[in-house]
Length: 316
Image (cartoon, rainbow, N blue to C red; front, side):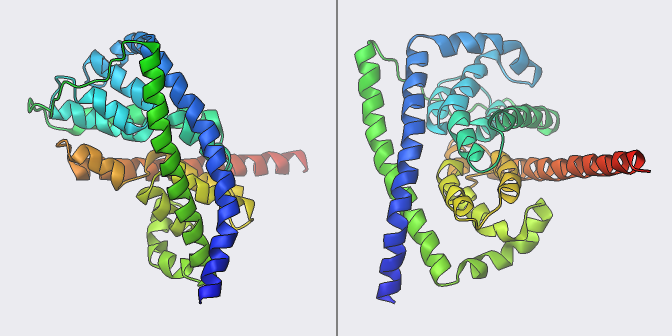
């Protein structure tokens, strides 16, 4: 037993090191760029153009800055801006679902690109579905003037040096977090594989995977993606693809689901702690993720059928 456990650790560490380095090379420059864009007011300037669009989905124009922030950064930054706004709980619910679907796009879409999905296809999908969710919730949620949690606290840096110092501090925390989480996941995956436990964990969820339109053997990936998120969970998927245990076709299907509905535990609880309804968030994201996957399957089926008919006509 001890030897098998040590073998799992020895096998996981080199792979973990490479994946950590890849994630850090991707995330750190992007986070620095976004802090600079915030400091020079470029993100605020971009948000101005989205005001009419946000008014259309039932949100005040000022909430555009929250959505823009969430696109480029993890949810904590968007929440910091969101909690400084005087908005209603209804508006906060709509905005929360939008941010949960389309947050940290550059990093997460780069991860899904490595496992078979189009980078720009994923960006377009997540932004589009975020607004579909907003329209749906704006039409179905009852009108309410209940105020949302508000705290006036947004980081404002007085100098470029302060921006770089804040980035360096957050980067050090991020480096430790990535190394710990990815390494633990790689070791866990090796242990589950070594002791034949993945099938035992995944089998009870196979009916749910079928309902979602996902491959029946994607249960483990679904669990990882919804417990720790897409960026970290993507490291596991990358590893499985590189080892030939997961095809790019199947990983692409899983990516379409997780793009809309991932990290259902941690990320959802961040907004629930502020007063947003848990079931509205989870049910909306799962419903839209299911529609996206089945809609994609239908489109592929129609295209295949059309191509087969064209082929038959040309060879008669």
